[in-house]
Length: 149
Image 1 (cartoon, helix red, strand yellow):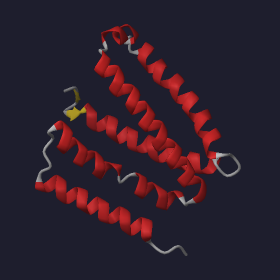
Image 2 (tube, one colour):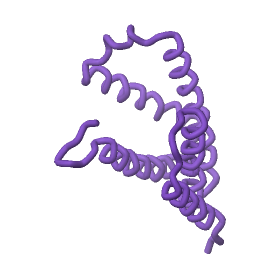
Image 3 (cartoon, one colour):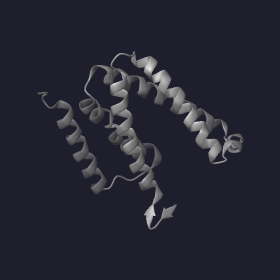
Image 4 (cartoon, one colour):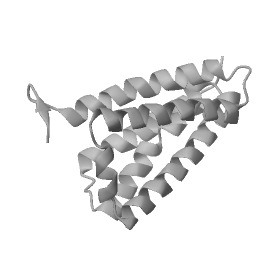
């Protein structure tokens, strides 16, 4: 595990992803005011593709693609399709709904991810993790179902 000054880098990356994700939602909602959600996704996905491959080349990992096996390719391609579907659904939800209510529902993916990780990857859900997941789910539900003013 990489660390920097005693901090696990995965934690820093996750925090950065949270900030980027929140910014992504806000800018996407603003950009959808007069644009079809699927067109908006197509534009954003094109930029994401460039950023992703830019990161691959920047880190010097392009040559590693040849090391991927058939199962790896299959799983990565399936995940790409699922990610695309999730993005289409998110953009459709953001087009019609308020970002402050759509986002908590979308982010319930953390709960589903934890359950899937326990079922398929053998990760343990301790009582602390379970309690935290429960509290986050209740919080998301309260926000999403709250009355608008």
